[in-house]
Amino acid sequence: MSLRIFVPRDAGAVAVGADEVALVLGLAAGKRGIEIEIVRTGSRGLYWLEPMIEVATPQGRVAFGPVSEFDANSVLDAMLSGGEHPLRLGIADQIPWLKRQTRLTFARCGVIDPRSVEDYRAHDGYKGLERALTLTPDAILADVTASGLRGRGGAGFPTGIKWKTVAQTSAEQKYIVCNADEGDSGTFADRMIMEGDPFVVIEGMTIAGLTVGATKGYIYIRSEYPHAVEAMNAAIAAAKRAGYLGARIGGSAHSFDLEVRVGAGAYVCGEETSLLESLEGRRGIVRAKPPLPAHKGLFGKPTVINNVLSFAAIPFILAGGAKAYADFGMGRSRGTMPIQLAGNVKYGGLFEVAFGITLGELVDDVGGGTFTGRPVRAVQVGGPLGAYFPRALFDTPFDYEAFTARDGLIGHGGIVVFDDSVDMSKQARFAMEFCAIESCGKCTPCRIGSTRGVETIDKIRAGERVQENIAVIEDLCNTMKFGSLCALGGFTPYPVSSALKHFREDFGPAPTRLQAAE
Image (cartoon, rainbow, N blue to C red; front, side, top):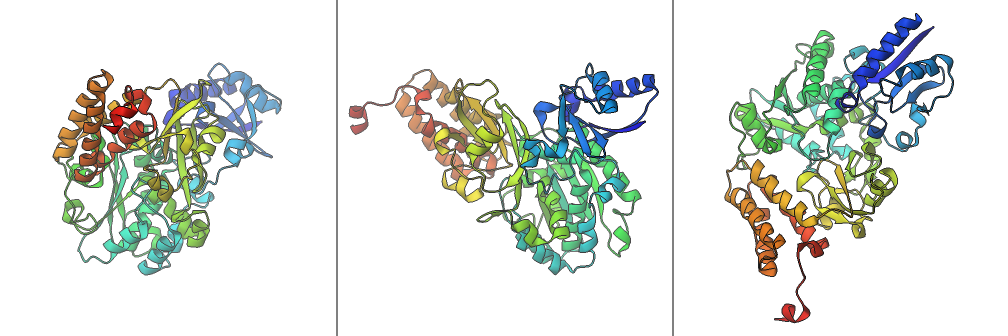
């Protein structure tokens, strides 16, 4: 009897013993004289069940999890007999948490071997590129624009407009740059897709190159992601061998090549112009805009810079058509968003769904509330610079404009959950401290404002002239929001102001009615 077993090689799964499980499964099969094939996949994103392993059966892939190395022997016996096991989860695709998702970008993640071009193609990979090779650049642009795709890195800028700007710029050399410097707290979607389905990023970047006339691309990955760096390099090498990168891609007259560059750990290099400075070999310092990177970007040439998830959405749009993508979502937020649930949450992981689901549904229903079982007090959406939302705002739909209307940010789609033991004045202080540490130092509002912010919140927490110092914090936030060169200083006020607005009781006694009147 021969078994095909799927064990994730995703960093999250490896951190909780996936490598050891794969090793023990191999040894156990050898002792039984059984032939097994272990395929190392990415993760499906159910992180509370990792390592979640699967076995191919005539009915579909059956999942078990969370499997430790000590469970591997009994799980293998259950796979061989088809019998029950305490860790048996049933058919993977039928697991409710997976079944209720709309997986467009993450359709292959956790399913295929991320090192195999053949496996990628067997699951509809490269169909988008094949269609793109039959179209004119204008026709590709029309599809990307009609899809309504907006940048998934945080700003939500329409992808079609960005590409069109670069396409219409005359230059002997243009570049495609993928921003994989995923530094927001509670986010891991970029890492997951690079480790679990790297070819989808390569395909999306290649289509971008065809569209705007670029022949060279760079993937800038944060140094804290060694598994993603390895996966992308392996996939690039495989794509070259298969003729999907280099000269005459896919048998066409077009050329496009890719290279991975590793950052040095600066959060500010997630900002596109700092990233370009770092790519050019300089210290990551924000550039003033204009000129925009679309006109004068990497090495002074017109450059498309998009996030990993933005490029990863492109193959579906080209293969299935713009309308198929735009049919999902609400308002000006079209398609799906891979949402990352983290923090004090019962069911943490990657949940891809169409825009429009409410924050409350995501936290209470999908996430199952807090891991501790205590009441949810606050959630931070959009990374360390995102606003804190109380339960009163849980009816907010996951939509760019809906969050903006309530002084929030979707950002990269990370949701961090806090229970009622959280001290929101500490969280506000952390935001200012984070900005002070990570600031590139180029502009005064960010560099000095954040440092003064830490000092002033410390005074408030010590009970020193609370109302006067709160007024100082509010003034500092206003200066940073409108005076900073980039989003690091410009967005730091969001967590601080929202903590003050919605959790005022954590910042010392409120003024009496008489004091307020005076």
